Image (cartoon, rainbow over all chains, first blue to last red; front, side, top):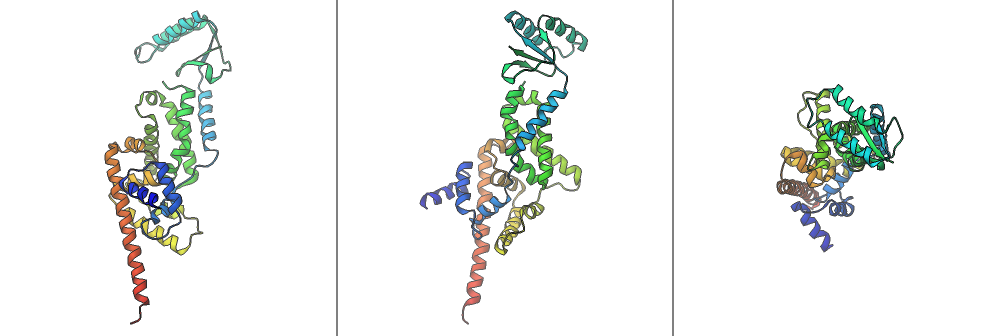
Length: 139
Length: 179
């Protein structure tokens, strides 16, 4: 009890962690009068996320990614990787903001000709570079 | 730029943590589920900024809060402050006893009397479960100052609750005394 009182003092000072605050809420969550009743109110007000929320959000974000047409490039050799990475760096929007889109695509297509490109399946673990235009993965 | 894998691990995984704040602000659980999805899609589209941000997790909470406030403003342009009236009622299941309903009414009144900054901070911390660095990103206030505001709000609520319940208890005791 003494430890709980110390924790309650720290709580009032704003010096407890979320984990410690959970302990206080577990202990005083049923109190319906006096200062500790705040924990009962806070517990009741707290909203819990539905169980499948994260999975649903993930599939919504994934479907957005798939709707965007992008060039997916599979790299199988170090030389091809070097050529592609250099091309991608040249296309870096921060450095070439004024470069025409057609010029960018021409450079990129030249680099892609040295590799295998298409709508291939790839694992996210294999991705070595990704932006709005291109995904490069290593096999 | 943050890639898909990193985005899923660091950002999408925060969905269950932003949900309580979104649901509280929107006062509608179903709308909150759609909102969390929309917020994550916005963040994905804006991941260039997110990857370079010094506090990406805090930025997620800031984006979520701004999204909700924009939505609320569109729904009710006259509303410029978040009060607790609807929230408290929405959180009640109908199975509460008289004491719990009374407590809700009392605490709602006390919270609505707090200065806006203290009210926001205590709600974000004690109801939504945000870390201090996440509150810092939303409020633009240093952590030490957040702790001070939080402490003041907690003490005020505690003192008021003690006063109210001690007064009521005293009244009951007095009423029971023989003349």
